[in-house]
Image (cartoon, rainbow, N blue to C red; front, top):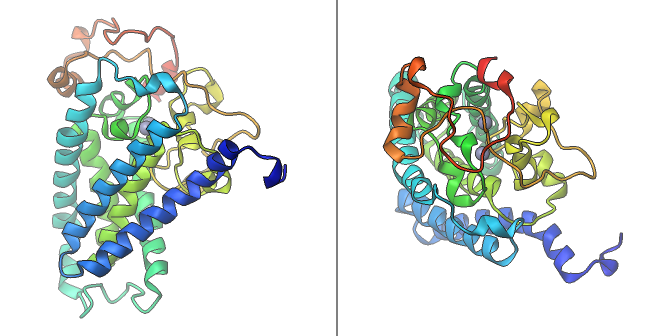
Length: 318
Ligand SMILES: [Zn+2]
Ligand SMILES: [Zn+2]
């Protein structure tokens, strides 16, 4: 179909994905140029900017309108994003650098990178390289969480709606291992702090994008980053072929390498998402404690409503 035959809305659906990435990168660069002396401030300002931008897109062109309405987990989504995710990620980051960063610091060159890091390459190439290394940690952490570490990830799969706000919905230990794996890889890579901060910003922006309730047709972008169309397949409950697929948290590269990429042509994931099988209490602190409760205390009764569909018994055990 040629562009001239597409309606304005269809054009918007196809352009919003690339525009999101271009906007995010431009925002970070613009802020960085203006406030070069305050890189951490730039990181937080650009991240807040992307939260607002993703929220605006969800409001203007939602994929599934009912998902705009908060459900009974809304307060927990906020609490999880700003407490569980913040805490888990920062402790994980600190431990990763304490464990793996010391020898990089010892070897650090003038620009702050380790001697084995290719710091002579263009900055954009360095960011792409560090992102792929970073995602290797994320990918294997996510695969582990769908196997032995399921108890720390099952909460994320209780979601019944997807929104940028709940990309950080999960157990703090899940976020801790996520950062331990990903920052561990980054610390070992020896990339400079500047590369690392840009990487962290891109990671946050793509995290929001992956859960965004935005009606987009991102095309080839789905093969590169975890855009909503591809990550939605990771959450659906009505398509068994999609279970345990698309583990990429921000980049899809390792799903291609290890054969777990799933994006059928001409078919979109439905809005039917959520794990109905793993027991989960509805309260915030009870959800923190749930992985530690004795198995005999788990009644099997689903307390988050509207999750009745039996599914993926395999997921909890393999
Ligand atoms: Zn998952
Ligand atoms: Zn998700």
